[in-house]
Length: 144
Length: 127
Image 1 (cartoon, rainbow over the protein chains, first blue to last red):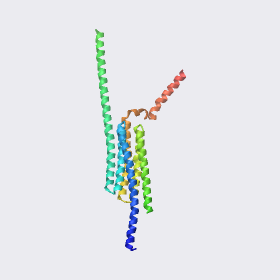
Image 2: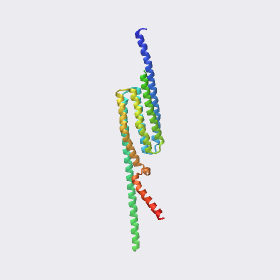
Image 3: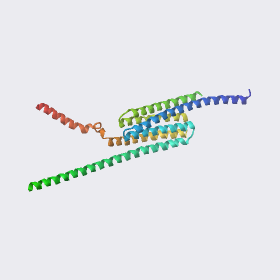
Image 4: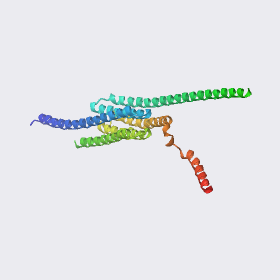
């Protein structure tokens, strides 16, 4: 057997082994992505069902975490480097979104509370004035 | 060749541990009733889950610039997750008025109880 042919045979053998390990990696990463997809769906269901606003924000935050994982796995599976940058930016925007949502809902809650307090104060004031008027009328009748 | 398979096994182990943590986190978020408990479960996925999944990917990649970027994702998450958790817990404590009974701090609550107990004792003595 000439050396050149042996070389090709060896490389073919090597390539076969490499294909085996590449297939193993593909199965591993695809399986992980499938599991994460199921978990993302469950987390989205919780974000719809969640009774309060904090529950929803928690569920959305966790969905974002899992999407970041999926993007990172995809960057390894497709061998694309730029997807890791997408991953980083997604993490930053997700964090910013949580902080902004918390601030906004705190502000909304405080505004509603102040509005309720103002309405109660107006009601109390009106009742007080009514009582004063009634008392004055009673005093006048007594004077007569 | 065996080196590559050892690498595969390491990556698979890390990924499976990370997925286990994520499954636990999602289960906890769906199972718990109160938002603060849910946050506890979600923080598990935000820290350990992403650590192990991305550690597995770093093992797949080996030493390269991508591994450094993936490590930066972990670093950013470990810095940002406690901050967002703190904001969320503050929102929950501020807006949820049903938490009042759960959140009574001993320092604020105990003196009254002590006084009441003293009064009760005095009453019993008086009776």
